Image (tube, rainbow, N blue to C red; front, side, top):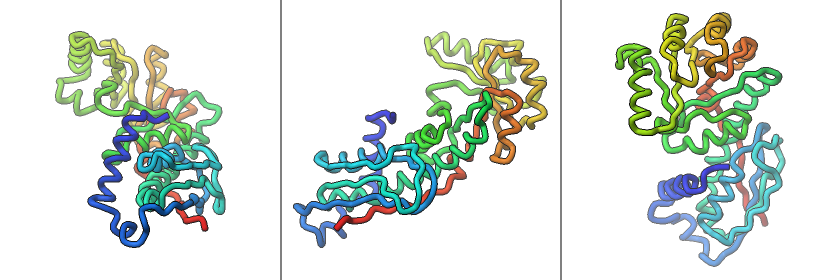
Length: 282
């Protein structure tokens, strides 16, 4: 379930961007009292996502909107199917149309690609994580689409988890210094945040294990055959995450290693929007 206030803020900003000082195409030729009905037509196969968002968009413009869903988020969809019907002021339907389609087409593409990866992980312990490689101001919905597709949301931003990546480590003077400074910082501020540390070699893994006090070890750009020696060192003491260079072709090879997570930015930034349309009902 999407956080209601954050979704309302996103919708308000997106509508302001699109409508500006008025939808003059609609204002010019449609009386403000006109009522109408429209349906969302599915034109491409995939996984449906964004139904909750679509309803919220219509209702933010018109609280008296009648929204009738025929499918739900996460349902498979086929060309020719109808996802929902909506009845409201025609001005509402026309002002909401593009935002609804932009959100649902994008979210459905992400959910569909995510599900392809998740299907490859069936039967394995490994779970799929998304990343912060998202579209600015659209992260909320892109990560929701990953969740709908069966993936697991990683941190939402820089504020809800500590991730000490290569640049943090290099600027801080090494893994040990970075981890110790981070632990002291969190304790001083009474912040209850998990710490993840990126490693680039088995020596890095050994150093993280020696310093301790963390929650997850990222194995960055490790090939599948390099993962088991790292897991042998870690011995289940911390969660493990493989990241970098993971594709649909090799994700199962990573899962076979027993690593806890694979993080794949491509489920968002390589996803292709699916074709949907909102059409007036006579």
